[in-house]
Amino acid sequence: MADKAYQAIRDRLIMLDIPPMEPIDDAGLAEALDIGRTPVREALKRLEIDRLVVSYPRRGTFATAVDITDLAYISDLRMHLEPLAARRAAEVAGNAEAEELGNLADFLDDVDFHSLERDEVMRWDLHVHRAIYHAAGNPHLEDTLIRYDNLATRIFCVFLERMPDFDSHVMEHSALLRAISAREPDKAERLAREHVLNFDNAMRSLV
Image (tube, rainbow, N blue to C red; front, side, top):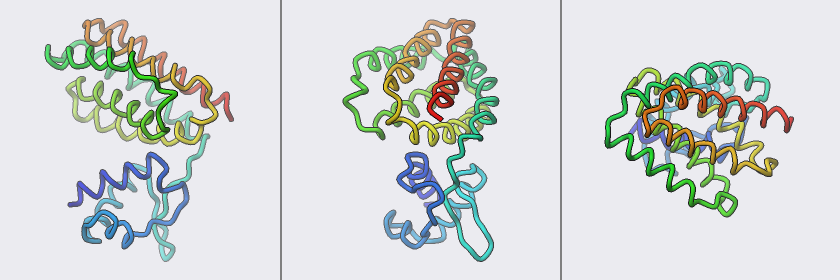
């Protein structure tokens, strides 16, 4: 139940369904998720470690602010870890997993992202990144990258509607997935680094 609560609340925080700095109503969340308040409170403790919520004595728990100044810190870490995950995935992914990543690239090529709702675009972005992290075969690297990708996604959600070419950012995944599927670690590493750099530049240009 705590895992279910964690995943559900995390999703709402990432997609800004719980807006930044919004107070967290644990009783309301427990009712909405049809689970007890204890699992919700356990989930909130984990989410505080993820920097998605913050607790203040005698004030309660709140969704963390989306601060563009955090982007530099997040990008600095992702600039090193995303290329590492992409390289590892190209080196160690099994045949079935490599084929699955290639099929995902083919599927992305056929998606009209401008026709999708914001949350659908974000879910595709999250899905691709998580597939790559998992394919890297290192659970510690995977957990770390998921945490920072969640924070980057919240920033992406804030600025998405002001990005006229957001679809090109999501479509960068296609070449990256194909490089991993084709077992080209050098290319995968380079494309992953460029992807993070392009995201960072795009966000800064909108501030």
